[in-house]
Amino acid sequence: MIKKNGLFITFEGPEASGKSSQILLLKNFLKKNKIPFLTTREPGGTKLAESLRKLILKVRSDINIHEEILMLMAARSHHINNVIIPALKEGKIVISDRFADSTFVYQGYVNNFGIQKAKDLHKNLLNNFLPRKTFLFELSTSLIISRLKVRKLKNKYDKLDIKFHNAVNKGYKLISKNNRFIKIDASKSKKQIHDKIIKHIISLI
Ligand code: TMP
Image (cartoon, rainbow, N blue to C red; front, top):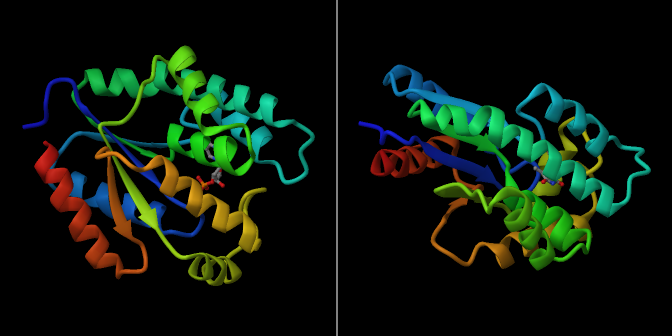
């Protein structure tokens, strides 16, 4: 059923858009249907990359944007080579909570490194390794803020700053103009979103 060379899918979107709970629902669906899969996340996914995650997302951090992007690339390289590619070779569906698009948006656009420069680095250092499809969760800034208000803020990007979340949303709009992206209205019910995701996943395997 699943193609021999696996299927790489990512979930992207702003803070509090519900990606992680949808990944959990998808995981349950795949388990129930005995479809081989692996879920992972970025920054992270390997022991080394998880240590880098702590440094990258530390609330009080003195690393500059160049250092941050290089750490992200190092973490991603380790993740791709040691986790993602091996699982794809085993024919699994690999689902990553965030991947390169987050770098294009957060570092490239929001933190002014440059989207094209971030994409060029990805091409040169990571062989332009990209997912087959990306579920992009879209949520208005006001809903992001009201959802964040009722949860514990976890990292330096999990903040109640309207300008920041507007920029994240704008960044995702700018990078998602091709058919790799499947847009999800994150204000819809969990069930509606889950059903849409399952429909797409089934069409891909
Ligand atoms: P989350 O995965 O728990 O949502 O949070 C991870 C945070 O890391 C999120 O605010 C986005 C940020 N991030 C980047 O800034 N660049 C990246 O390349 C990745 C993968 C995440």
